[in-house]
Image (cartoon, rainbow, N blue to C red; front, top):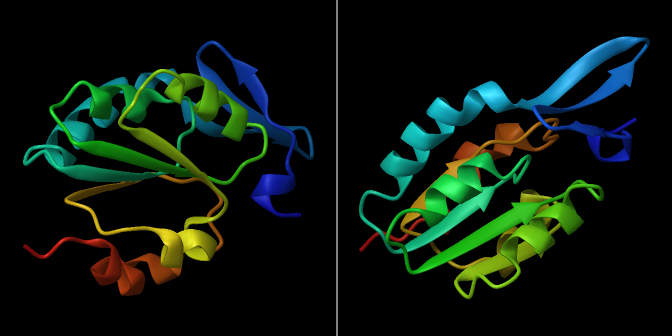
Amino acid sequence: MSYTDKTLIFESDKIYFTEEEIQVEVMMDWEHSLMSASAAYVCENGGDILEIGFGMGISAGYIQSHSISSHTIVENHPQIIPKAQEWANGKSNVTIVTGSWYNVKNNLSTYDGIFYDTFGDDDWDKFGTELPSLVNVN
């Protein structure tokens, strides 16, 4: 069973699912400082930002706190997609793309910064190879 087929449980401080009575954490509230620092690095030159994986929206909030032109978020989990869409409502520079980043990569643009933080990504090993096609080289 793929990660996107798992039924997620949303609590105020984490997202998780259970597998064989074990709690598997997808994202946790303690990640704020890591997400803040990572977003600052990715956004340091502004421009167009690609975020792969929305999760709890922690990194998305930090990315939005920077002076950027656009913010494209790719999310593949069917329970998280509506949360990302609701979060993006009213944010004119945000575009939500649904599906696996690997499956939609040919429909994406090129970006000045890329934030990659996924869970259960079956195509994570292809990211390094595909990265050059997603990055602005100017």
